[in-house]
Amino acid sequence: MTTVQPRGPLHISPSILSADFVRLADQIRLLEEGGADFLHVDVMDGHFVPNITIGPPVVEAIRKVTDLPLDCHLMIADPDRYLEDFAHAGATYITVHVEAAVHLHRTVQQIRKLGCRAGVTLNPATSLSAIEEILPDVDMVLLMSVEPGFGGQSFIPSLYRRARQVRKMLEACGSTGCLIEADGGIKLENIREVYDAGVDVVVSGSGVFGTPDPVATLRAMRERCAA
Ligand code: DX5
Ligand code: ZN
Image (tube, rainbow, N blue to C red; front, top):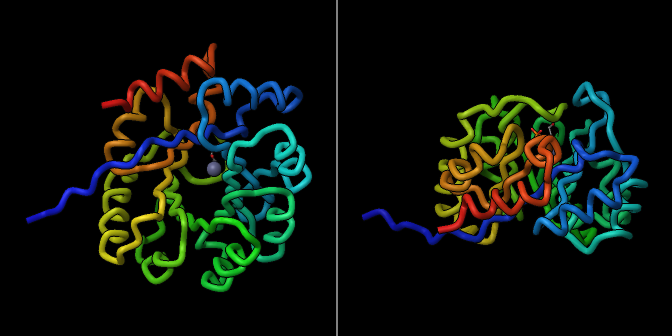
């Protein structure tokens, strides 16, 4: 008989990538007002991904204006070089791409040693077998539902199957505290399906900031996933 695991609470992690950077503190206040659980910070280096975004000084500045956990998604080559900088800047979660981390076990240990929670993430075409061995040691698995690099892309539906598969893998290794996060192309229209696939943490950038009233959108997202 299959045991059905109780579903955990929905965590919404709005991505500030689509925020107005000139008014970042105000934008973060809106997210807090809307009931955001985490703040998703997209770090891009122009090398692992074509785009360049923000670095540790901005994370440090954000840390000063909010108590929300900072969910730092490093889309950078050789992430080991910057773990300490992001930890000192105030990151709560540091998530690295399995495609970029050559010695993943060491990287994950280092993130935890720095006092942060460790996440691993995979591009949509990367086999889930890439995280099988590291699963018992991580706090979050981030599944990309777009190719990393830009906000505002279309959702890739293989996310549903992949999230269900990761849930099974976590149950198989007894790692119940590890969160599953999904990132890319998630909006009010598809958030419920994503949540129903077993995703604990939903990232949304343009799906929040691209709407006329981000506070109302965040509340509607939570409402959509209730009961
Ligand atoms: C893509 C980033 C995402 C992005 C999501 O590389 O990792 O976090 O900000 O943006 P939307 O929700 O607009 O797809
Ligand atoms: Zn992201």
